[in-house]
Each structure stands twice: as C-alpha cells, then as structure tokens.
Length: 303
Length: 303
Image (cartoon, rainbow over all chains, first blue to last red; front, side, top):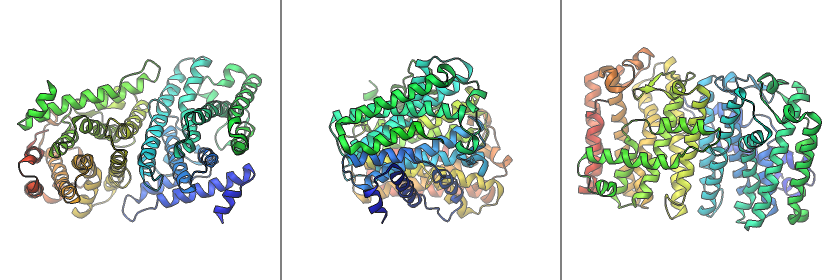
C-alpha cells in the first residue's frame, strides 16, 4: 500500500507524507532497542531520529533516486542514513557546550529529555550507525557504490563539511563575517549534507558526470536558499510555528544573511537562488517535477 | 628507512616505536590543517589524535596484518582509522557532561586545551574521518573489503559496541553491577575496538573463517585482560606514570574487576586470560610472535 502511494505520489504533500512514513519505518527497524542496560542510548537515538519533522533530506534522496529509477529499498537506506546524520548534528548542536538549546522541533532537546552524557552518546551512535547502514548490502548490491556513499557522506558530514561549518559558526559569534564568509559557512554547515542527499540518487544509479553535476548545482543553490529562508523564519516566524525561540540568532549576535542584507533583499536573493536551482533541472525534463516542487517549498515554508 | 625498520622489527619495543612513528605520520598526512576558520577544529583533532600514546590499537592492526603479509599502506590506513576512533572516544569521554576529566595522557584534555564546543566537534570530526579513510581506495583495492571494514568498525564503535558500553558504564555509577555485567560492559566499551584492530589484518587479507575466529578469540581475552590491568593501574599506579589521577574509578563509586575480585584475584584472572589469548595464536606458529609479546606487555605495563 505504501509502495503504491510512493510510486503514485503526484503532489509534493503526498510525496512528503510518504517520505516521513517510509523513512521512519526504516529507521524504526534499524534502531530496535535491545534488552540490556544500553537500551537507554537507543531510546535517546530513537527520540531524536524519529522526532516529528519534515524529513527534507530523505525527501531529496528519494526524489533524486526516482529520477533514475533506483530501487526503493536502496533509496530508503540512504534516506535513513542521512536523517540519522541530521539528527545527530541537531543533538550535538543543542548541547549545553554548544548552542545550549532546550527546545527543538517543539519538544525538549535530547539532553533535556534524557541527560547530557546520554545525548552525547546518542549523537555518536547515530553518526556511527549511518555508516553501518550505508555499508550494508541492503543499500546496494555493488560494494563500490556503497564505498562511494560512505566517502561522500563522510566528506559532507565531517570537518570538510558540516563539522567544519559548525566550527566556523561558533567562531562567528565572536567576530563579524562578511557575506562571502557566511555563504561558505552555510555551504559547509547545511549545504554539504543537502548536496549529499541530492547527489545520492545519482550515486546509487551510477549516473554519468553531467547529471551528477546538475544535481550538485541544484543542491548548492537550494541549500543556500534553504538557509536564507531559515534566517527569515528566525526573524519573522512564530515560536509556535518553528518550534524554537524566535530571534535566537540575533540574540546570539550572529551575522546572518538577513542581518547583512535586510529582509527584502534576503528574500529576493532566496527567490533568485531557487530559480537558478530549478534551471539546473531542465535536463531531467518532467522527471524532476518533484525536485522543482521541493525547491518552491523550501522558500515558501512557514516552519 | 622506516620501511626497513618496521619490516625488520624483531622486538616489541622496536615494533611499538615503529608503529607510533608510522601511524602518526599517516594521521598527520590525513589531518592537514586547512587555511579557513575551520582550522581550529583540525588543530583540536590533531592535538588529540597525535597526542603521545602507546598506539596499542594500531600496533594490533599492524601485527595482525603482518600475519597475512598485508600491504603496509593498507594496514596503516586502518591503523590510522582505528586510532582516530580511539582518540574521538577519549575526547568525548573526558567532556564535562561525561567523565569531566582535566588530564589525559599527562596533558590537558581536549576541552581544556581548546573549549567544550571545539572538543565535541573534534570528536565528531575524527569519528567521521575514520570512515572516510576506510572507504578510500588507498585502504584496499577491493571495495568489498573496504565496505567490510566500514561495517566492522561501525559495529565496534557504535551503540552495539563502544557507545553502548559507555552508556552502561555511566549507568553503572548509580547501581552495582556483578562480574558478568562488568565483563559485558568492558567487552563493549574497550573490547570491541580492540577486537576490530585484531581482526583487521584478516579482513584486509580475506583470511578464512577459522583464522578470523582465532584472532577474535585472542582479542576478546586480550581486551578483558587489558581492562583488568587498567583497573589495577588505577589502584596501584602513580599519576606520574599513568598520566591521570589515581583512584579515579573508586572515587566515582564504580564497581571494577579489582573492587569486586580484589587485587590478587584480579591479577590472577588477567594472567589466565593472557595465557588463553596466547593459546589461540598457536595456529599461526612463529608468525604470531609479535601478538604474543603484545599480550604479555598488556598486563606487564606500568602505564
């Protein structure tokens, strides 16, 4: 039934709903809580990886996989892995030693719901499991493809990507970055993982370089627009909608796209980026309709 | 020259010294600090992964690889990866939210030398890079072997292994574990990564199941003896020798092998385990001499 629903998903809403259900089903299966005392860390991993959310990165994995007719099981394994990495990054970002956030996706953060030590370990466990999932034969029959996924996710998530971007973001609290530095920061902090999600379908399908490049370019502009939209929401959204305190970035004294460009120019920039992103999809013709809709959604969303 | 030295290494001291030099050389090459603001997290990763230490896990990787005549570059890549995972685990264990330790290997811990946020990210970066290293073609020409290494390291380091063991260890501060529970805890917390290091040579060589099983059994007993020796050092060692405060476990109210068995019985148990471990090496004949010496060293060491 879910098989049918995903295959027939015509609208973004249907595809998004199917993505949440299917991805969570895979994560639920991968994160079965064992009977021993270590159950606690599994509970914390489940709490965060299965928290209500948009599952944007899994949606991008599934949408890019559909472009090439990739087997659904393969796409879902990668979707689960990328969501685990995303969940781990949120857990560690929220820690008292980092952003010290109490609220995430409208619920207590992991270290608030459990404790700090358990949250550190839950993040570590999710990051580690993502690589276990990618290296598993269920992800792809060809080990060369699995290795490529591992290498690409590690580069996106590690010091050359997300970890390095987060490091710069912390330093940014004590100095003023210009728009070029912020663009680089966001490209590493959020863009790299989004780019991995968009390219995943092409890796799974062993697609030719020009198609991979088109997806990477789509992802680069999408990721940046996503971040600008996030900054706009931080200024304009309500806590009820976003599930986190409004104005948190400004309170932390961080330069953002909005603080430098102002609301109107930031919004115009996001629109421009999304139009560019969508243009890169031309060579996929009608097959990329879902990715086009995702691009629109990213800057029109209210949460 | 180092090539020669490693190949000819006749004594444990020579092999251990060559291991430190060669492993650190590989890690140094993999962790080049980039020019951007993210340099800080690379500096922290280098600080911890290149800290003075015994490099026991790399030594086990190299010793098990030599059993099968594995190419040195392959063995060193895995040695670097396993040391990165070990270094990450120490960084996160030392955090204020975990063991809150100021001293490690005789130097300030990572969060003391840098700050807490940088230390969290440095650990995350090292863990992630370990998988990037294993998935790289330099590690092995056959991607199936690389995938197997990724899967095995992820299982050893993640919630089924080290992360789960650390979770149990934290819970153990609030309850009394019996000897069976402590054995299981230590098998996960320190044993799993040691077992990976010992099995790595066999994975790299695609060795037959009986040889892999012998190495796993050797590793299981070695890892347990290693932990008992650690507990004995915590009671008997000096801070100058071990580089960490004496009696830390007892102060934390943790049950250890020594607190349950007493010093004499714990020492006898460690001896018994080492004799068992060495017996599993019989089928490698003279080729396993280095692994036999490592086994003796593990319980004779003073630091």
